[in-house]
Amino acid sequence: MGEQAPQIDEDLCSGCGDCALVCPLDGIVIEGGKAHLLDDIPCDACGNCEAVCPTGAMGVAYEVVFDDEASDADQPVLDVVE
Image 1 (cartoon, rainbow, N blue to C red):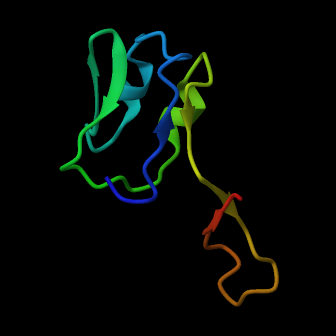
Image 2 (cartoon, rainbow, N blue to C red):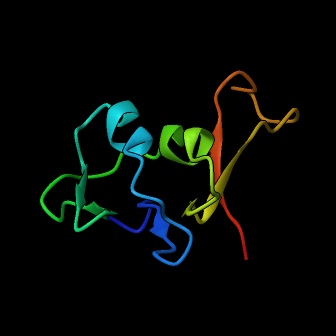
């Protein structure tokens, strides 16, 4: 997984599997009752896993923003959250 990959808080993860079901690349599996990222699957930063996680265990280090001043304002830009 690249630097865009979500971080998983195992203390919050309930192992429900919702994140694995919505990952378009099948990059998340449930093992030992917790979500885990597969290292050989590159994350495309879709954010689906974070959106469906009922406990807030999935977190991404970016947010999608739109730059109204950019010429391609319709195109989202990944912005790293500090």
